[in-house]
Image (cartoon, rainbow over all chains, first blue to last red; front, side, top):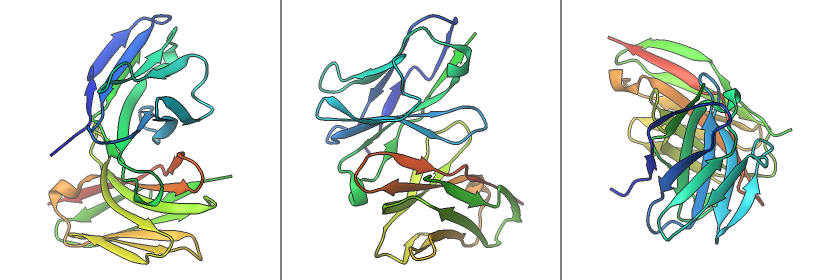
Length: 115
Length: 112
């Protein structure tokens, strides 16, 4: 069964460093998303991406964050100059459609620890 | 403000018993409501998705209901199994955008 894959599964970095989290969405999906879940808290929407551009972003997704689809398969989240509070699980998701029929398929997440 | 509230926060039941989880939302204009199961440290997995016109939807032992008038949904789990132990998250989407509002989840513990 097709699935969303994420790498790395866990990354530890020093405060101030740049981090790139990678995702391979399901191949026929057109809509891509990043979500964040701080330990013990709810999942939070970060950004959605369609047709090679950001469709919508939340207040969390500030200038520190950027997304890119560098080729036909990968979808990346870059975090510049990481802060302690960026420590969280980051989930990538994709969907074939959006709206009422847009079922989201999530990856297993990338755990980011900022020291 | 768009919000999704879930209750109870946590629940302990015995294996084989049924349970019902609640979700109230204020998201507007409403597009759809989804229930996800999230095992600890894993990504959420979709259980059901319902639109405005749907009142109930089943997926195996999971049955979700939706009352769009009162803006309430429930997830009923029948004949619970130990593997049902997880967080169950209610997610509501508004029309006109891609943003999804997640509830904090109900943590279900199924004991033998």
